[in-house]
Image (cartoon, rainbow, N blue to C red; front, top):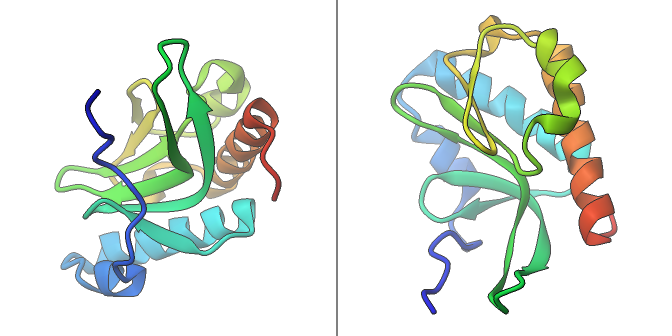
Length: 141
């Protein structure tokens, strides 16, 4: 069975965030980091080389494969900022309607910049997704 590549590391989150060249993207990422710390009550860790993640949960699939992954996180990519809403978006339809300009993948919210979305709605979405993950996986704050 292949090992999960995206794992928590000891790399410095501050060094990573400071390395973001675009000053606006850097400021947006710092604001998202604050939202996630507020939502989880946990300090950030680097997950792999380019993902800032918060808190963790353990999972076991029906196949027997198991692992540990972050409850929420983000990554400043070249084209956008990827925000990881791990439970997906199905339960958050009402929030998504008021969010603003974005795209989604299965568990990824893609935004160009924070000014494209309602910050209060984004913060609430992050908080609600953290609550859902803690409920699903019986994790504690």
